[in-house]
Image (cartoon, rainbow, N blue to C red):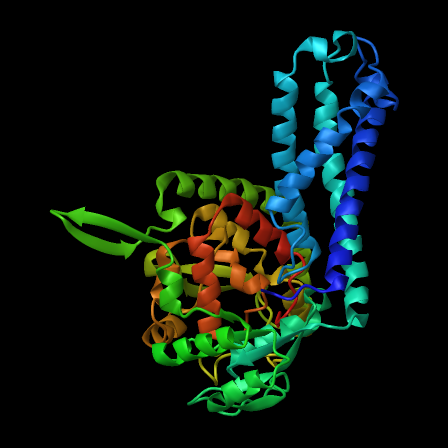
Length: 476
């Protein structure tokens, strides 16, 4: 059973108590705004102001309803990601579910249940959603910041042993070290057969080779083992799991691409013969594609109108800063592998690849202009792609399109690489907001793209768009 520290217990109790206080503050604020604030002059109260005690008596039930849905969504359990954007969407889902439950309850209550037959105000309910959302989300952000400081000083953290010394292990270690809320620390790394010594300073200390794993676990002090090398054969994985069970160490692993592809399968039968296939991704269904396209059209039109002055200003700055055109068109591979012309603001010197051929941009790339570096840093060079979205070449969110030169190379080395072309490419994507852009691992990007395809929803797209506003890692 995972170890749970006193610090975690206290932090969880404080978080629940804070939610209770903020929920009731939001309830009171909704009543005041509707019946006591200047709003009453704009929207008069026609049937008299109901007594506050009528609403006060409903607060306990409402509080329990919201807390229950927050709990179901994992608000009070340890998570691998703590940030304002994820917290916002978590609170939104819980608040929406709580509001639906409250509206159902009040609809079922007879008029005689309320004082003098007064029904609960519909306008108060409309005010309640944004107020609860703002109060609780602000409290969560403040709580996360306070918990970070608390956890940095806490003792008794869970010891993680990472099996593998590759890029995945380095990413996990970096995430653990940046998020003290996880209350974990890296005890060390175990090198698997065939792995070369990593030059990353993140991969330290290396406790030894895989054959030393039983001795490392025997020594105690390890709470959790994470297998980050999906290439180990089945027999070795079984032995690692057995060793973990023997020493009461929790086991987790990073799945390989085949596991990711086949988590969801369809089983059909032809004349008694079962056939197993990979289930269609959500965007293969016509209704979902219609919803996504409608969202793309609305978003691209709004974006083109809203950002037209900014695009014009950036284009002028590009022309003044360096010789060449302000806009830059490049051939990319999109849905079904078809090519299209992608538009960007030019960020590099003219004919940047004349001597090198197609190459990826890298950190501190000498080909970037001064204005171009700024545009890349703030993702402003991608704004002209709103035109591609409006035309139907791209989507607001999806796997990033690559040039045909790179696609032909990657498809040979990476299984299922072309599966990411089963939907429209996007201006931004799940891989990009998680820092996988520029000269980063193609395999890691493919894992994130496949996760997006399997788990698409309108809410997921909205979440990625919001996260894009804060995504700066590897923006060069």
